[in-house]
Length: 91
Image 1 (cartoon, rainbow, N blue to C red):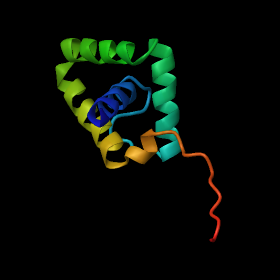
Image 2 (cartoon, one colour):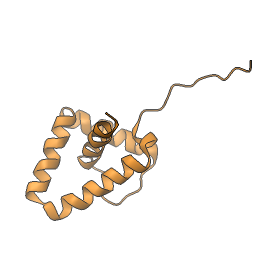
Image 3 (tube, helix red, strand yellow):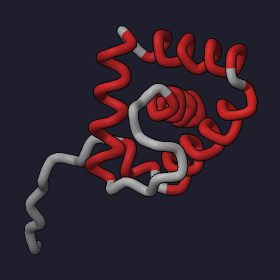
């Protein structure tokens, strides 16, 4: 399950407008993933865009996917929505 989520997030980041090689902040990554999923009509649309890029421009698609995978796998918390604030209570 976790690898499927990482793959879907990477595909959405691949489909985003962020430049390959950039190291955006966590909030920017979350926003880019959400915007791509919305613009593509879901994660399947992001995967379709990625597949088309591999067919049309394989020389640039592979490095872009490596970049997207590195961002979502090295910083998975950056790709996930933040947890709601929780209050710590001393017992």
